[in-house]
Image (tube, rainbow, N blue to C red):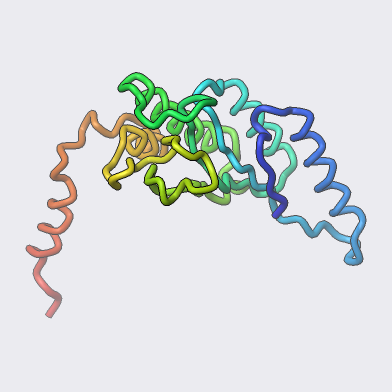
Length: 184
């Protein structure tokens, strides 16, 4: 894999990376393509647009390579925001969902290779050298779920999961296992 960041906001960088991949594939000792896929490190900011994300994924899909999101996180804005408002938290969740849905829509299933979240929580220990004082992840500093967690779940599901989720659905899965009669 060849992996790079800011591909969603820099079409010229994206084009240069694709050219680099072509160069590697055409100029190696095997006389065959050797790059399996392209990874995009998506350290995005909440002002990213759907058009930017869609355009990047469509361009990546056109390479025929498998495509991974290797480091997804969503900052509230360009300045550290240790205490985001409810509206900012919802915007962050919407961006997480948008990125995941765009990936699933614009990257053909055979080329999809996965989405990795960059970090787990907003705890200061996880931000010693990167996004200090910011809140880009899906768990807060105390490891509690943020609205962004639901944004990720909605993106994976492709719908608002709260429309039919009671919060007790997980218990039903275990109850059905407990009530099943073992094979004799």
